[in-house]
Length: 66
Image (cartoon, rainbow, N blue to C red; front, side, top):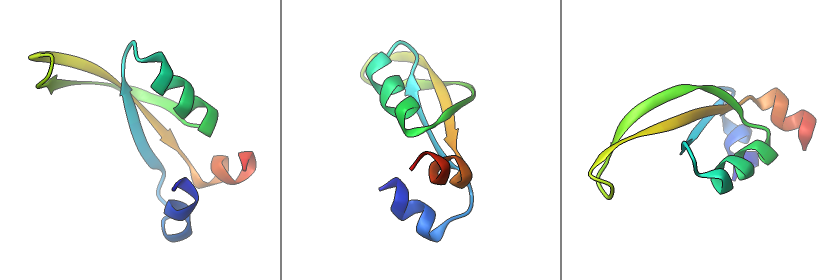
């Protein structure tokens, strides 16, 4: 899916995970995503705000790691 994204886009791919979700963090890290900041957002299932660790992946990083 990431490869398909970069076939048509030059902009970095953005993603994120809820702080504390180590499984999601590990998957994104293995793909080459790097931290880009934090964001608070409402979570309906928790009925509270959660902190999202935002991450980005550049085309250059993707191509170098592929």
